[in-house]
Length: 382
Image (cartoon, rainbow, N blue to C red; front, side, top):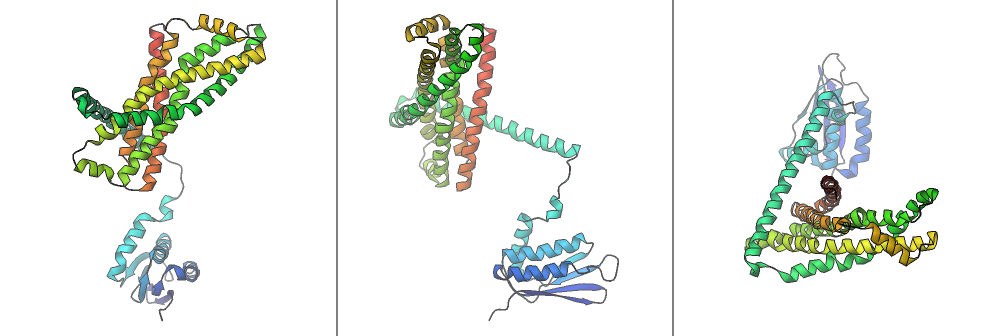
């Protein structure tokens, strides 16, 4: 019958020896942990000075990850107390396991909490900056690949995949109408109510219509649509392509001579650039309807008067400014979603991680791009 794991101390001469034997498996971990705690509390340097300690592993019969971690923990404790520790007579078959455990479960003392110094902060900041600069460069490289693929399709229309394009339009457009419409309607009510509360103090309730109309048509409609689509369709792009990456379907496509960018990315990018402006228009209408309902019920502004005031508020380029931004937002969302999907590694965990990253990056870039558009429009007095 196999012997349970054990360890005992054998002092002698000028050194201290620990002998580990039996089966150091997870089933014996509680008893081994008790024995080790008793040994760790004992003297590690009986003769004074820097003591050499040997851990004799000759009687060791079996070892798993938990057992290896316990041995390394004992070694680390003794080393922190000033001893020179060595593992003697360790069977060759156990060495790789100990190396792996030591690699992925480092000594907690080396990770003790401390206030980072200036050099550490600068190093962390530099690593962060380098990684993000590299990401930006890779993003522009991916944009170049998509541009080349689009050029090939435009010059050779037979390479276009209309079924995939229409299918993606269905998923990113009509299927998203309910959530976009509902949220826009509710935001319109909230925005109109908050504006009316402030304007009522000056007897200018009628200008709630101007506030609602300009805000929705220029900013809120396109931003709401883009953020919803980034969380809904952008994440779906990453998850779909990432799952294909895990299942090695993309490798199979490359093997048979198909370009993944042309087959997977272009239909999604094109479909989203077509549907997001339409979704923006729908969001504008629903937001204004929500505001009109609030104005009618709360401010007693009937619909004909609301529409008349709205017509006087939305002049010139005001209506088109939000729609102009929509295709650019769609391009960013689709590129980020597809790129993060292609960066998925061979694990389900990577799919979730890249999907989350895709949504965060898309929303961040959409807001940055919106700020750039605002500056440009202000320069042209639009």
